[in-house]
Length: 149
Length: 149
DNA sequence: TATAATTCCTACAAGATAACTAGGGATTGG
DNA sequence: CCAATCCCTAGTTATCTTGTAGGAATTATA
Image (cartoon, rainbow over the protein chains, first blue to last red):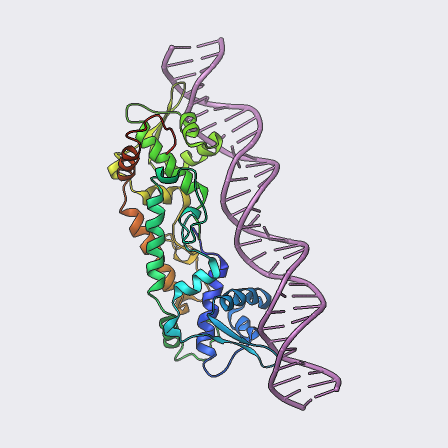
């Protein structure tokens, strides 16, 4: 029941992006350096975030990424689902509803998975990127030379 | 962010056990047959449940398993944590607190993981095995010949 | 225009984990 | 005694995660 590094790294990258790309786009390289991540791997995460309209990119020299929306309008749920897919704990409770189990209506455990899914979504949909951005800036207000989140 | 088969199979096995072992212990073999699971694999799950005092076993011929407590006193959280370990979404938010991340107090994503962990635990700690047992019996009251959950 | 810095794309590889399988030992009812 | 059962653990296979690699496309800047 663990989140993968996609979700963890990707959310950290989004916070970093929110904090450092206020004026202009920032490069993947700079994010990867601050967060000590593989640049190539981060690239794949950014592709997921871009596909879900959470970030925008500028190609070419001095190019980079910035947020596609106001951080007040991006929830942690948007970010995690972009990176991880559905946060449902089983295939049979994914929102896309493509998986069908043989027990159909006779499964008593399904209600448990649905309740877990709903509670996770409720939590992450009620935290915005802006909130984490503010947390970050508060924590680092007297330590702007520290480059780790 | 998916539950493993340990959690899924194991919970189904516990419901089966709750329903079918009311009078006397039932064998692993019979559970495995009803649920179409590998007997050897189920055995490993039962070992976890036993270690956590959720089931009791009787060895020898005609032996088997039964619940170690009243199903009203067993929560789904007890069962899932016995099978999966902590339900926290990251190592850094496991209740045992052994993992330490280098960001220490400077991590803004940690509060998100804590909230997810707490909401999952709250959900599963508020459902008892008795409730699922009752659901099962209700669903199957006119179909006692159906042996699948 | 040439160059370097960047994003974009995709195939592949290594490592970790999950999901079993296998088989032998211990116990006990009939 | 023996067949049915739980008990234990080592090994194997399949799947998924976590990257690595490298080349193509784009663009600011000198």
